[in-house]
Image 1: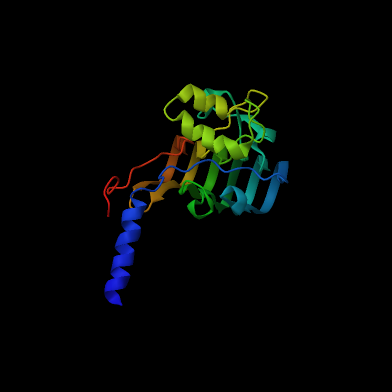
Image 2: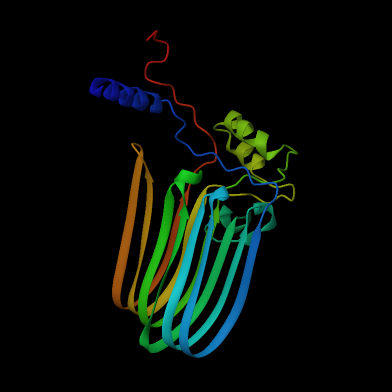
Length: 264
């Protein structure tokens, strides 16, 4: 029995060598869902703010929390849509700064000062188990003073209404046929309003001035294939400007198994 089990494992590993390692974009649901939150807050006192968005249909995990006691000014927006065609934003590190269609957009402009540290963090994950690319970005901080201007973003789906009039269901096959033709891929990933969908992208753009501890972690892992890790942490008085972005070309890639053409 032990020999049979080993044989089955080896067969699975050899078969996996012919798997499609690229992650195609996710087909958006017909009955799509949305969430929007926009707030401006200014004052002194106890602070307890948290937002979480988990959606298995588009492989999204998002958490954002902060807690403290002091003086705060907060201007924050959360926008989430399973239909990326409905959520359009300009982000400097995506699509050349031109307008992009996204599944998640988060913007935070924050000023804080207090004897009690403001402690919090942010986590955006494209969960591989649900069809994402397996990449995540995370920010953590515990600060007595901070000024922050930050944007987080996530996209994983095809256009709901592609520019060429195709359906999202057929678009995956068209992307596979487009292959290395980047212009054809870009056209396929454009909505009928002419807005590009940067599918399979996750990232954070941030500018920070702080007194305390602040840091970021970013990982991208695919079993037997990819392992990328980036970690930074600073304690003291610092200014930081940073972009973390993971992006995968939304074209399925064909790989030939090692025994192709052999009668085995």
